[in-house]
Image (cartoon, rainbow, N blue to C red; front, side, top):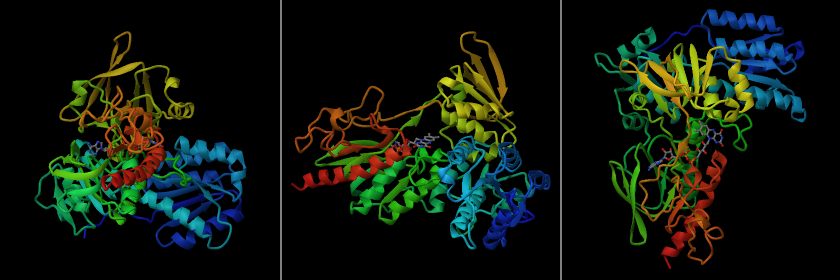
Length: 567
Ligand SMILES: Cc1cc2nc3c(=O)[nH]c(=O)nc-3n(C[C@H](O)[C@H](O)[C@H](O)COP(=O)(O)OP(=O)(O)OC[C@H]3O[C@@H](n4cnc5c(N)ncnc54)[C@H](O)[C@@H]3O)c2cc1C
């Protein structure tokens, strides 16, 4: 058994000025969590700050900090700021009263606090003994903390040099597929303990120890080996070679098509090139998806969708691309990379968009060795204490630098245009300006990169003057937009000038019912039987909810198409 000793039980802290309320919150926290956590209540901000500072100095873990919404903004921010900077993994919640939803001021505090990353959530105060809603909310928050805290025991442990590009890729893969993992620096005592027990005498850049799955140890594994060891299929070995519905892509739209297709009795196969969740899987918090008022991580949404589709009988194969599609009789033959052909009676293209490249050869050369496209910044623990840069001026770039600022010594935001107001929301600009570790470089391009086997330095060139500046960085996250890559599709599947797939009326085609596409099959492409949903579809709204909606409703069109095959 490999064990790490992380000392005291993690802390749950509530800060409330009213002693009666504080007492109730403490009692309720203790009722469910005292066995695993230390519960503390503080009535003054000064005592709370002292406690948090002391815990940081003694390297004690803090899982949750709850603050009273009745505190002044100054006091509330003092506690939240210290929690965020000294205990970046700790979840931070605002305690609000039942009925507070009628108060626009409280709603504004919550919205703003969560948008800029001060708060993770709001928590309704316990109002009675054994308030189960309160207990469930706290359980969710501490579960999120445990997923993030690098020191908790995990089902999978990755041991590597924190600067290894491949280690980052493996961490990102695990993170995006929501496989709970811990990262251990190979030079640390915990890292050495794992290596001695799990991989004695086996040299490798990255060691992956599947603690919960029979203790399997993988040395320098491929992505397919990692997922395969966790039980996620990466080959077609056990999958049917003939299906009613082939879904290309397992982002939100593809997962929805899989759930609805399989639940409505269609034999359904999903082929995904990369990881579950697509772009959404890289989002640390989706806050506008109906029904999740506290937001949910894209990887969690994806994992839930995957399990739902799997229970209904959909089959999946990950780390494989559909490379070719051709019509055969009244069906389609799809070529799956490295796995051969599958015949499908209908196809849903749910292949989203891919990240736009910087197109600078010296930068591209470090892809995966410090340069990351579409990476989940929340997997960036490996960059803790190091220096990172984000290229891009949109809201996702803004959110990424704020996230990185929790861990990194310094963070650079490199933006081509200026001013930043043209591309980023005001609340994010304000939050970025408030982080002393972030430096914003507007009106500059990343024009060169160098390093010894991994990224170490970037050259930024000022637009107009050509003036150059060098910055030392260990990681560059490129977030300069995305475009569909649909070149692999047959020519008959019509696309617009940017490569987005035309559907319904856009195709100018009449449906089998003689109706225009819009009235008949709004998601059908110019080829009957091939449909497109989500971000890859021309004119679609590029959001999770609309992708899920399109993936759900397209299945009724698929049914109608399949019915025509029997006529
Ligand atoms: C960082 C970030 C944060 C975001 N946050 C939000 C948010 O908070 N709220 C919101 O509403 N929207 C958000 N979005 C947008 C949202 O994620 C997308 O609109 C949504 O994911 C689109 O879903 P999709 O299934 O159409 O495509 P995608 O999510 O792009 O998924 C497509 C999938 O298809 C796979 N694929 C592509 N080609 C092939 C092939 N040939 N063979 C096999 N597989 C293939 C890809 O690997 C990918 O996994 C965010 C996007 C990003 C990048």
